[in-house]
Image 1 (cartoon, rainbow, N blue to C red):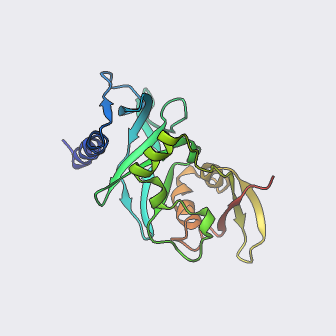
Image 2: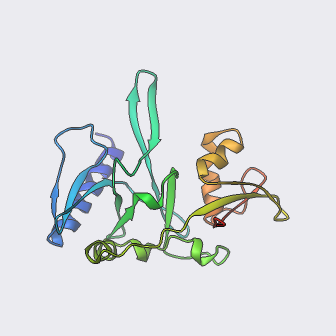
Image 3: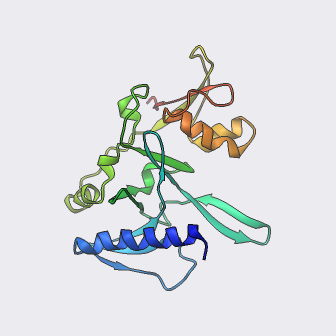
Length: 208
């Protein structure tokens, strides 16, 4: 078994344990083809959870939202939908985090911030403290919805002139001719990189 597989299993079991510690029953699917890793029964509210391994970044930690499956043409990667799962879950530095999939739709990865970069507007940051397991469970139990602001990503020249705007990081990468460029664009958006592929990439609230 590869180290990556071992780490994935370890993270999955750790996440399940955090739910169980809080008196929440978890159920694991029999089929290996389910999009989710387990179901959490939160006061009778069943939620589909997909576990992801967190990777350290300068301002916090990054989580990939991609699903990989084999086809006759090789491995294929897709993002998850709200029909497939309800939350992403991970463990980072002994803290469990729960992230609603609806907040990261269309993104191949996202960063939860522990150490905010002053160059990035505060309202654009996904603060890790807002996605701890306890906080998200409380939102579910009280029926409180987190504000889900819609954003756009502006592709700008070095002088700040907006060249174009996009709804997802994938669209940004495609505008540069290659989907693999998405990772560097993501780093630029989150402030850990100044520019990517000759442009500044700035996330802003979508105008009404």
